[in-house]
Length: 197
Image (tube, rainbow, N blue to C red):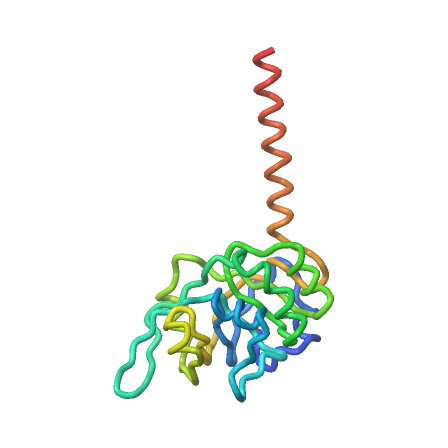
């Protein structure tokens, strides 16, 4: 399914857990330093808007060649590290999507439901393949302050692949997998205890 900018609340609320999407438009990266900066009251860079935007948990490998940036690798980083901050960022700045890996917690899920936002799972271990979906680096912010991996990169992407694993209706594939795994583990442990008795 094509997911093209503008990333409106209507488009995001139409998505359901399990939907595979190909994202096209401008997205921004944001990792630990960026989230903490916003959490501590820091401002967005001048001219940057996250409203109706998508934030990618990514520390890309980027080279400067002939006056232009080229993305060599752009795989997702583990999202749960941003759980203390993400719900606030979604609510305050009007985010419509978060890309990462591993899923997020209940606070983020609640913010997604309230604000018409989704969590999109990108494939880990495919950093070079995902970089091929980035057609242009349109800007970079906080490069001096945070360093290249933690900077806020602005990418134009075409057909960037991801799967909706937390939707805007309170559904979470990550939560479902955890519950199923716990039930299966309890059953296995129960069988082992009965055999020992």
